[in-house]
Length: 265
Image 1: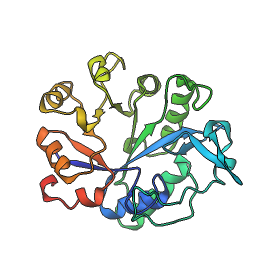
Image 2: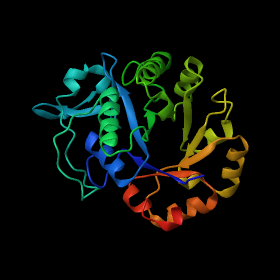
Image 3: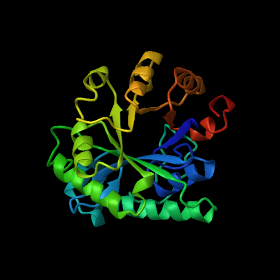
Image 4: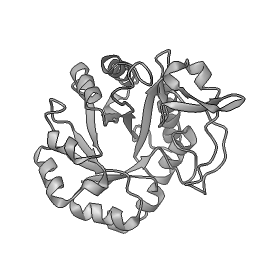
């Protein structure tokens, strides 16, 4: 089976993260899986953004506002095309946080123009944190229902994966739509010790931070019949080490490096 290389928030070395140009660039590099982040607006639009907040508002950069407190029309007026100091090669662009529906349509159209229609897979991370319900996110049952509805209405549900660190979201989405593809993100060993009881089912993927990974863990997870995609793997030597551990793929900020490595072919 082909070793999978996922573009973390798009091709971040070239364009600001979670923007349509970053996703299209990832496709141009040869990526066939894009990883991205979802939050919800006040009017229940599914918006692509890593952080559930915006710092400041037009004319005042001192305030932090949750996207869940604003309708999408307001969110769309905030530019997110400023390059990140962590990625000095990023281009300055004018961009707003896209809705999931708009991104799927535009990136699929871009891939189709390149003669590769129907190839792109979208790995959607639902951002959710216990304790911020009603402030940064809806209640899990509402949140999961909104995301599942969007996926099912997309017409490409067979090319979409849904993942989260929040087991409540994954479990509720699976209850609503058991035939979708699910992943469980893991950042500490406690979650691994509670797997799969914390979900109530065995998902298609378990995606741990690469620092947690050893061959024993990979074999254990493969024993459940799940695939293992690790995050966020940027040094080339770690990419190789992860493959040697037996993982099924990596999520990386530098797909342009990973795709060109014969060791990962």
